[in-house]
Image (tube, rainbow, N blue to C red; front, side):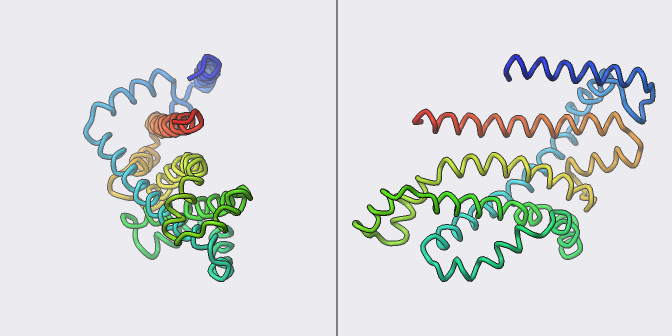
Length: 243
């Protein structure tokens, strides 16, 4: 974290402290020290790690499936105009449906436990597919000319040229998609009232009017998203530096 970022966080915490003193109502705005104590308390429990693990697993499943299918379909679309034309209505449909509609419909069809990963897949797939296809559409003309001069099989071309060319797009898209998928998964867990997960803990805190717990678990989500961003930034920087 940069020094400027630390200063911004400190200012936000000070504002939070001032607001909590002015409001003086834990149900509305808890004190930062109370949230910190709550956070230190829950991270020593087994339930904390089970909740975080279950949510991350659900996100990884949806993320992985959407990434693989989007990569395959985008490569096929790039090589086949017929397939691309046939798939365009589905592409537009997936981009147009609101996220909340995905969540509600999937919960009705599959129930709470099975739906979170499916919801992540439905929401993340258009991001991957559109970004991959856009990147391939903007492939340098020199590479296209080389592919025409030295034709290769579909699979060999994908392995040797297309996928390596997509690495920067894969990293940047994955960074955005994983963070979004994590937040969507928590939302789906809350609406679906799953048995275990971060969304479950937020739901319980809401029912009990435990705003301190809500703030603490929100900080957990922020920290996880920050770690995810940091990991992908390291990978992107490594790739940019020729790693």
